[in-house]
Image 1: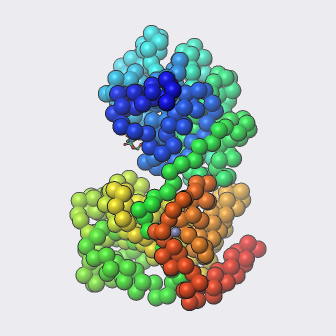
Image 2: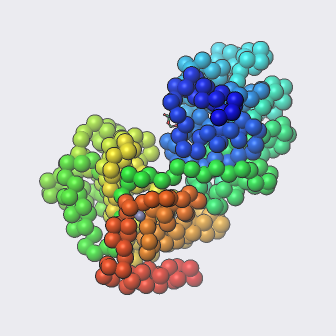
Image 3: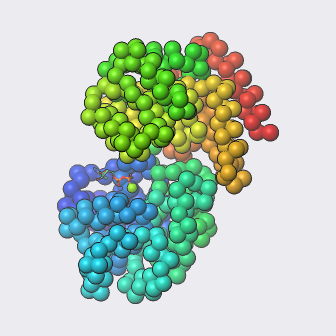
Length: 424
Ligand code: ADP
Ligand code: MG
Ligand code: ZN
């Protein structure tokens, strides 16, 4: 390794306390440190923060970090300070003392990372302040917030492109959302249309077994799946609130510790389920998609979908909650023609603008493509995200190639027929 690469290793261990880079991190750190415009796409938990924090230490000037959540910014600033890095944040959550300390450090020229809440970009004086302090790099965390058709759109993110152009500094954008539309929007809005260098890594979760099955007595299918995994913590996702209640009852009657969770429950009741799931071994939570954000249980051994998720992105997020500890985990996704109709109707009846609805149909179609895949689910899934897989051997299609499964072709034809109807 050359001198820079040794510097990276030294900073990695001495400042951040990590023994080695995660997949993809070194290349991103290198490119960002060299001042290339970069778009890095890595799944949640992949280690994106390090990819701008480490370059910030190697580059001259202040690295401005735009991030959508004040709590996340504060956590990162605290962790950096504990590691001895001069970092500060300007957010509406600051005390006056904190803000003064940040400005003092900026005046002395000692601050390396300045976290900035997006709404600050709209405040008068911010641009002038940023010009004065000598910004060396802009890092944009959760860059998909710039996408108007996404779920996390933040209008203030639209000001970032302008800021980059006026400061004329490199920009590094980070997100876990990898679909082509979002990437294109990020390129347009943050990079003024000149494509950044793209890095896409680490979407594979090799310990998660992937499987799909057409609905054929779905309640029995879920009960059988759970019975084969008695005593293990699992999640069953359902499309409706009512079904979470009936299915969790059926699981209890089958002797499992099981409960339900959905957005119609009181906040207290929801928190109880979250805490119980975290604490108890072997609990099954039957839930709508409301269950998940903020669930950080490492040993969820299985995730089942009693109904088809709404998109390939949702599918990936939801199965991704299994096996965070790296030990084997299993998934089963059921799908039927009713699900597909329901999902299409939900998209068509949503109040989203037409472009967003088209994108949502595309994400649903990608999931249907995965459901009717004829070879390796994992390679089909990862290729959607632009990532690739070298070995799988851990999906239903690798276990049992489809030509030996009766009826697969009939199912595929039925699905294709529905797909075509939906496109009209
Ligand atoms: P992301 O933003 O991609 O979701 P984070 O940057 O929050 O991920 O990192 C997720 C976790 O991984 C954090 O606890 C972080 O400290 C840890 N981490 C990041 N890089 C490494 C590494 N090279 N070695 C070990 N742990 C790492
Ligand atoms: Mg992050
Ligand atoms: Zn496979």
